[in-house]
Length: 340
Image 1 (cartoon, rainbow, N blue to C red):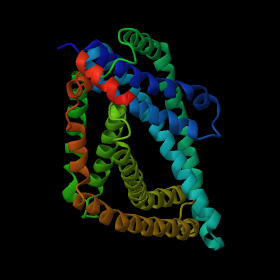
Image 2: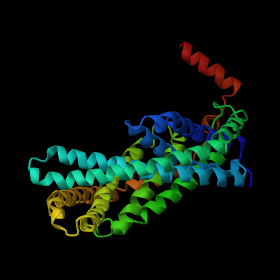
Image 3: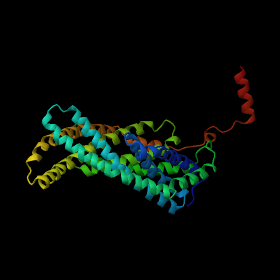
């Protein structure tokens, strides 16, 4: 099956936008370790590339798409480790800045030390993934093929039926995957499924974004809600990660202290700060979750997602089919009426 030239040109414009956003952060990721937003923006751009490339895969040789996806996925994974460490460091530092009890500081400072060590360990993976991407000319190859598609269809050409069909199919597919998690939302213990819901939200959001220009100003409401859901579930997931990580961290530090000193007494001064931070994460998780569930239930009760499904399935017609050209005698009558 071969996609239409205008569908492929549309897809090329969408993918090129994300490719350029990815490339803009290249220098900063390599050289500006102080600004953690370079890593964040490049990671988001890489995710959007991975979300949109499969939507328009028919427009490119399948082997090339597979190769592009493999290398971009590798970069996303490397960036993810670095970004997660950046976020964790910022979170602990912010908590430490509020601490007045000096007994809590040693544990938090030790936690920060280990996180910074871990962050330094992620940088070689980021550098290696980007170097491999450059060595294989992946980005240049993508840019050349994408720009070739742009020449095949004018940007002002109205979208064709095939493009709208693709939009309906892909948005509906992602919406179904997203809504499959509805039953677990009221269950706070379903940590893994809530994380999977966040991922499903992200892919639905990126898919809606890819096709939003086909529905001018009509999908903004849902994009806003999806962005909100993704951010809130992300915050809940961050707390869930901490609640698993911190007890393991304390046990590892206990073992390190025992190996170094031969006994565990110096370890005791680390416990209070880490446990205080753990309690703060637990309270934050409960607060975020209690606020999220009623909102989710309200969106369901209001039929928000049914409305999205209906919106993207509305028939798209050519204006000439609704307003056919006037006959010559009708033109004359209109002219008389207008002049009167």
